Length: 104
Image (cartoon, rainbow, N blue to C red; front, side):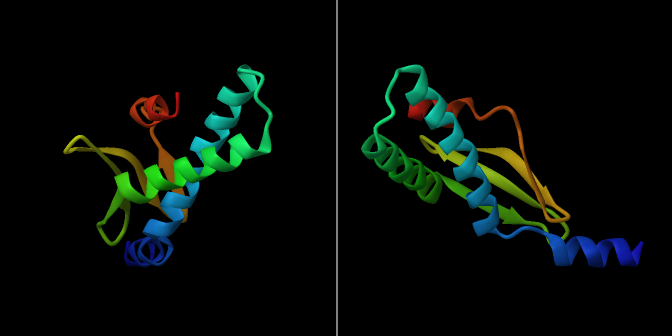
């Protein structure tokens, strides 16, 4: 049991890793939106990436519980857990609708 706890503490993804994964997922969603609307301009992608980075940097936080972490999204003063991180992995819940709505 002690070995598992030690491994989980050492492999718990930090906040920057969790934000990096979330940015990637949101950028994939943004590319899908742009391609569905026949927008393939690199300038739009650049601006979209900046927008995603702004959302993630300002609205995402993490809570570290030593052996795992939560990824939290705060919008209009309300915070909710949108993912868990443990053993080197970040598991985002499918409920990213609030974040995706900001991109639409």
